[in-house]
Amino acid sequence: MINKKFNEKLKYKFAFFCRKDYLYIKKILFFVKPYKYLFIATFIIIITGIALSLIQPLLWGKILSSLFMKNYDQSFVYTLFFFVVFAFQALLSYIQGYSSTNLINKVIYDLKNKLYKKILNMPVKYFDEMGTGDFVSRIHNDTSVVSFVIMNLFINTAVDILKIFVVGITVFNINALLASIVILGFPFSYLIFKKYSILLREKNNKILSLTDDYLSKLNESICGIRDIKAIGLKNIDFRIFSSLSLEIRNNNIELNILSNTAQTATQAFNYLSQLLLILIGGYFVCKETLSIEYFVAFFSYSSIFNNSLLNLTKVNSSLQQVFSSSRRIFELIDNSIYQEEEFGDNEIEQVVGKIKFEEVKFEYMSSLPVLRGITFEIPCNKTIAIVGNSGSGKSTILNLLLRFYDPLSGAIYIDDINIKDLTENKLRKNISIVRQNPMLFNKSIKDNLMEVNPNATEDEMLESCKLACIHDFIMTLPQKYETYIGENGVLLSIGQKQRIAIARAILKKSKIILFDEATSSLDNNLQSYINTAIKKISKNHTVIIVAHKLSAIIEADEIFVLDQGVICDSGKHEFLIQHNSLYNKMFKLEAELLIKNGSSEKTKEEILYDFNGSTTKTLESGNC
Ligand SMILES: Nc1ncnc2c1ncn2[C@@H]1O[C@H](COP(=O)(O)OP(=O)(O)OP(=O)(O)O)[C@@H](O)[C@H]1O
Image 1 (tube, protein in one colour):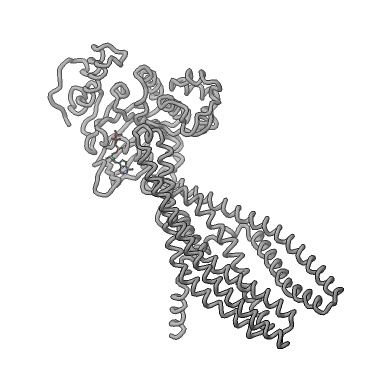
Image 2 (tube, helix red, strand yellow; image 1 turned 30 degrees about the vertical axis):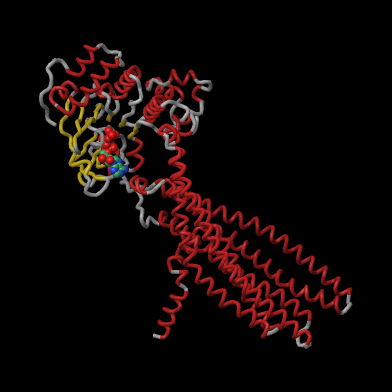
């Protein structure tokens, strides 16, 4: 019972270093494990260095006392000995610097890789919830902070505790009264340590969260710099950035003040105890109860003792930062709040490309349904278009097929296999998506293309570019396929990026190709080329096109009309124009615009024919 009470008390006293923190330290140790020999070697080198540094005060005392006694030969021998010790210590310090840097960087490298892999395997919904800055900060900053644990907690702190212990015994042996004065400083240092630890941790958490916002903001602004300038948001954007920076600055200053206050308070106690030491020690030397040799040694030892105590209080502030960072790292690594994507193990031999949605319901946010029970079937090698008003859920259908999200109910099948049962590789390798503003990497055009299929031949690459109507443009560039296209293809127009992305999808040789407003930036001339390309692709691919443009979908084998989360009608263009009011309305405006602007190569009659189908009858009513 007493024991239990004592333990409770102890738990309370050490609340600043709780069980969870201890677990984080253990988890970091797991990353150190592969380098245990390097870790042990570093530790031994440091301990040897300390042992040598502990000899120094004795040598100081010996040199001084032999000088006082005018024994110059002896003082010369001690001085020589001192230099040997010093040289050996310098050498050890050099080796230790090398081994600890090596150790820390290896652990950080492993930690970063592990974390990044986890992030890559996180479901897309978490990326919707968390800002970019959050991820960047966890990978870049938090992992580096953790290196502190290795050096300062595992090694330096252990060494400081050891020093306090060894030096403590030594000073007690020299003079118990003087040693008591030195030891007296410890409870004060400990109280400061405890008092400030909670405050420091809170401050660190605040700074980390502000840094996430700051990095997200920075990323958003730099990526959207063109829109910010064009919309005239420069000043507002700067104000937001500046206020975030200011908050981080103020919090950092406050953190520094807190940390300095803790250190200054400890230092004040140190100075006070040193003053007392000189006065009382000097009195003992005058009374000849303490030799000058031991007084000098004692003074040096007490300074080592105090420095180690001071180091412990310094560790405190960084330790709180380490705990905050460790929590953020292991939150992802342990999947404690974020689950990894789960896939099946069906390694289907050959995907044919048949797609089936069965009563699929989905919502991004609870009680805001986006899809309300979608059922359709697409035979292989067919071209399907999905149309509907903005926000009706067209892109969501593609996202579900790619398993970026899972349906709330219902199921999706590829070749009659539930996509949940397919392996990640089988699913994603067999589907390619071309988006409105496709993601391209800061590499050459060739590298961007070949990355999706490193086994493709040069001829296949050229063929896919010809099919996507981008080959002729690439050949006009000074370095042709070797041309670098900048970050996210910034050196290309959107239309050029879209066509490279189409070529990439063709080269990937997926059985299913999705076009999500992929040709929205192309003029009608290029659109007709792409239509021809899609026609060619569709001979042996299943193609789904999401588009608002009439010219992009008119030739599809079947068109699904999506309205308020359900497919309200389907059929060929000519049928829907006549029978579906929503479809009719959507494209009426476009047809009128084409005629008005003269932006189509087709004649007015041809456009009207496209719009009205084989009859000239105007539409009265439809299914939607
Ligand atoms: N990541 C998301 N988180 C929450 N809601 C989302 C998310 N993505 C889309 N939505 C919502 O889901 C609905 C359907 O979006 P979706 O992008 O599928 O529409 P869409 O028909 O493709 O629209 P558009 O034609 O404008 O591209 C919209 O109301 C949208 O606000």
